[in-house]
Length: 381
Image (cartoon, rainbow, N blue to C red; front, side, top):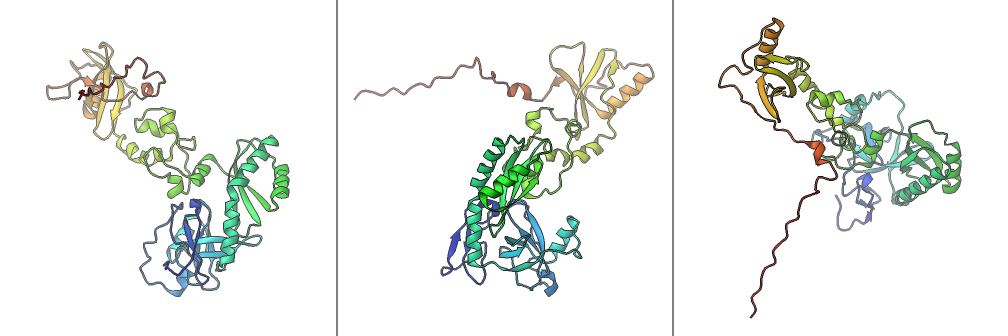
């Protein structure tokens, strides 16, 4: 805990989740946690731990970069402790994000065996380490912009999206996205000569870039790829069709420009619910005309049809059982007198949908007259 006598260092880089860092030489700590990414809740935090539970520790770095390290010195580490860890070359500075038996569960999740040769935790960071680390972090934004300018002058078809400095300021990882293979050997020479550091280029996809940068989705929450999503499954428009969603690219695309990952979250539920539904490509024939399928309310079990003999947007809603009955009669060459069996069945009604296409039109406000406010009349005194 931070006390009044404990000096603090301002550390306003929210990407690492710390706004202040205690300068206590015995135990430097991330005092005020921010919105760091891919956080794991330690629900076994209050359970007494055995000495062997702290053998493996999860360390977080900038944005979504994490690693699992071996606590060879049996240090007493807690969440938020700032430590110096092994790196190639030199050392790196990270923040403890998870300790205890849950670390092994996370390692199994990422297919990391505890028998592998993991990197080691050297010590708790000293004030001199933190000061050098902070100076390196303050250069990241400026160096990223300069690297983009250099890549543009070299006519490289790539976008540098993030720069992650090592804690000892001797190495930096440049994350970039590119559609095709890029020959960046000349870029590495220029960057190494200008910034006097070791350069590592790491290619990522558009979704990984969105996860590193972060942001808010259309739902109002933080992006899933920044908070908890670690593996990216292929998303297709078929998922939107199963869920009866409008195939509007502006509505279905996320901040990365790809289809939203959340389209897959409820897909299996919709697929299971539609297994007993009749095919939507089959038209219904009755004495009063032919009905064509328009949309389906999956969980209410209602299918909406429209007549070719009717005008306007008049729809008729039929239960799934009635649709199956009409299809069976049509297969036998019979046509029912009416689509609706009895009076108690749903009647023809207008569709309760929203025209999302017209909402995005640029001229949707044309022709609307703005109401003029009446100014209040003041009496002369």
